[in-house]
Image 1 (cartoon, one colour):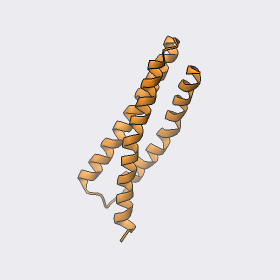
Image 2 (cartoon, rainbow, N blue to C red; image 1 turned 180 degrees about the horizontal axis):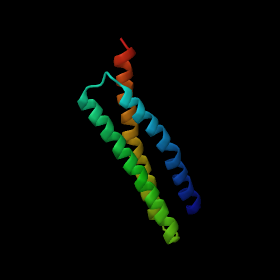
Image 3 (cartoon, rainbow, N blue to C red; image 1 turned 60 degrees about the horizontal axis):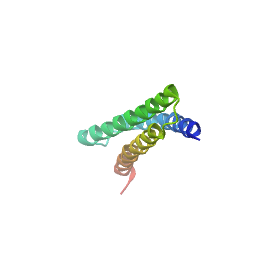
Length: 104
């Protein structure tokens, strides 16, 4: 069971990083955001990516130790969830940019 959870965490990290890269590219091309909001956006992306990297490290540590310690998996799950929060906020920033460019 723990092995399945660890593998699912690694898959989640692998599936989430490419969309973040696409959003970063979109942010770089946006012209309607003030510098303060751009800075905040990049900060959110960095926090998200660091959280996903930490998730991968915790799962890999679990594999290396290969002991049925659910605590490492709990940390991995927690970091994955924490990484989703800045990702969601960053998506909101991109929405604001889209609204400024195309909205009322």
